Length: 196
Length: 239
Image 1: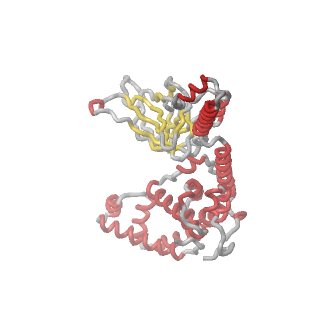
Image 2: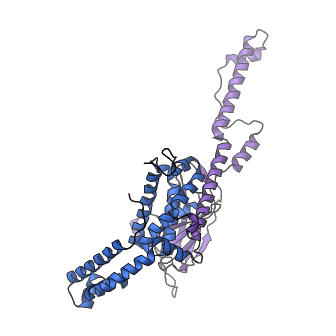
Image 3: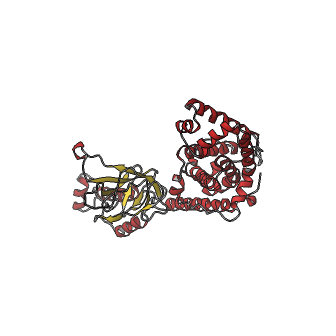
């Protein structure tokens, strides 16, 4: 596939194996978009910053294992790292920082205005508005169930006891409510993302 | 796609940090290429060359009818093996100094792990615990570590715990780790409150490890149980 630099453009990530400084080109190419990608999936600017830093740190540390030859393959490889980090964050609630620590990278603090910039980059305001609107449109039973599950982090047993319903019923209400919210997110204004 | 100048400030700063790390790696590679490739093999090559030259000179001299009898007798004897240790020759002290000054830091070369010592079953009610900080060289180059690791413990809420860290006396010397080799530092601490009225034990959730002469740190899960009474951890030097 042709890149913006021509048919036989060398891949910056491949070059960085022997010329570490070439990694800066790779970073500049993908940093902003990856940050937006992560921010849309975490809704948290600081977490997005840390995950982005860890993704690039892991990419730099393990760039010798990259087997592709094109910039597109390099981007897909980077996003695979980011997805893996997102998955671990979703399961554990903690941002992995192993590569950051091993490379001695100092993750910069957020400057004034960075929060607004990230929200704007990732379209978080539009996403939040879409979710908020969809949440208000939910059936009251589903709205209460989703609130107890997502905001108060109650178990299904506890939700069932609180709402005086059965546990399967509680699961069903939460599931339907979340599905409607997901549909609202799908319909929210999208930004171009790397598809793999 | 938005340009870099439209992004948040921290993204540009993160890029600078990555560039600094890349520059450090490039400089380290350049230093490794310029240094003796393998000092031991280079010295062995020089020693071998000297030995061959000496033997050749002896043989040539013995072939001459004017060679003294001592040389001829020496030529008749079989060649001795090269000594197992490095031959003493001018510049050996300078070579040792070069070897010491060209030590390679283990920065970016280590996998850091925290391991529980395996006790026999009859010690299950022991009042102390032993763990080990294990550093493995995961690169293809030798590097050096030394000293006492620094520990910083935190509980599950992220609050810092402050047990007293005491350095066990021992030989604080540089340890060269060949590829795949490990260095260890033992951690010994009390795990049960045995003194009346002692403060409650605290179980760390995570520990941040810093190694002497190596920038950065590693954050590990603490799986060694509670630290008690009053919370002293004895740390041994890396060996």
